[in-house]
Length: 115
Length: 115
DNA sequence: CTGTATCCCTCAAGATACTG
DNA sequence: CAGTATCTTGAGGGATACAG
Image (cartoon, rainbow over all chains, first blue to last red; front, side, top):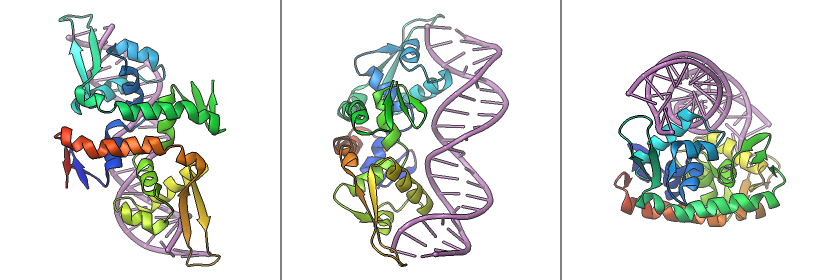
């Protein structure tokens, strides 16, 4: 049994899902693998996410210390960059397997249609 | 872009999360790795899941063809076994990385408390 | 440009009782 | 034993307007 922020998780698997689960976190992390990205760059590569949701997810992952937020300007227009932290980078093998499976699965399951 | 059951997923990562995301699916699959388990056996190893939720998750994964449901009796008391399908077994490398990370992460992050 | 504020809604998930 | 039925709650997420 594990506890994170006063909530209980029954096994190691659920611990990982606590960090990268949900609809968007793994997707955002995937786009940060090859380097820093700005807020609008993330919006462009994830067109179906809303501003609010992207903002909330980034904030949560910043609190979990898996991404880092750096501000490069003092006055608007702001320039902000997001990168993986060292801790976030320990997730790379997990993310790699997740993306790998997502790429090959459509060849096996007829449910998945590639457009 | 990918489409599954008339819903859109922006990248390969979100495809995988569509199948193993959510609070419980990866946990259930983890407990099926080393062989078939019955409904009550799953309840015992995942004590914090409710009957209803376990039932729903199993049904969804059966529809996704990642687990198989076999009934061994004709009249109550029923005996039902759940196993990974061939397609489900393609998720093994993903599940392995997920559990591996969940086991090592507590050594790095102070947020994660092992009880 | 990088977000917040507000409002709303769906759906995952929990609690509990009951059935074939 | 293996679920279903019913009701409830809450978090996740969407749309849009606005702020520093």
